[in-house]
Image (cartoon, rainbow, N blue to C red; front, side, top):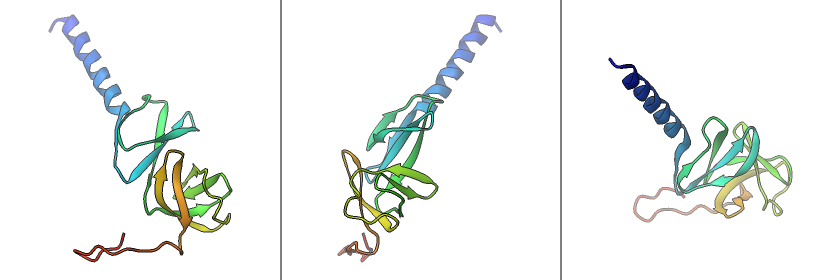
Length: 126
């Protein structure tokens, strides 16, 4: 094999790895929090998102996720603390559930107070 062919193949492999690390598809009922070097940057989604490879990490937050409001500015879902801006109606320390998203991030509601609706076709709750 020619050495220039090997170099081109190696560069193509590096390019493919970088592209696969930077592209992300976010579903309609979820958002991803982007953390660059450990600091929160913004929420992204829905749709295809391009991230900075090896610098950005994401954490997924779905509608219906249940967590705990740890302060006025943060709620914990799983092991990750997500910044929230609209938690004024919820007491700190109480269980919260993501009821939707707006431009600022998740919309939180008290976990026990959320109304459940049933699908008329199959009866599942949403």
